[in-house]
Image (cartoon, rainbow, N blue to C red; front, side, top):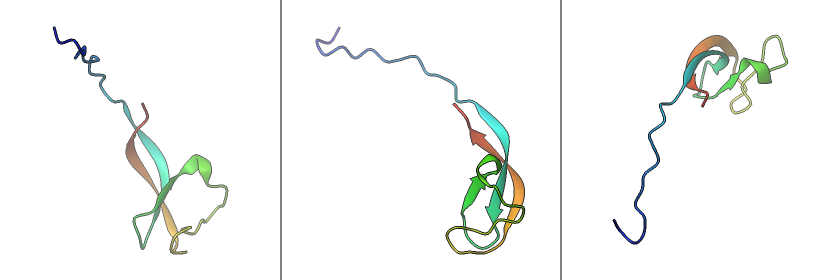
Length: 60
C-alpha cells in the first residue's frame, strides 16, 4: 500500500428527477418552478418570456 493512502471512496450513483422548470424562449437560462413567484415570469438575463417545461436534473 502506498504511504499516501490511495483509497478511493465507493462510487455513488447520482439521483435524477423530472422537475418543473421555467425555460427562457431566447437564451439558455432556466429556473426551478419553486423559485418563481410570478404567473408569467420573464428571463432575468435577457428579459424574454419563459415557458414551463420539465427537466431531468440531478438532485443528489
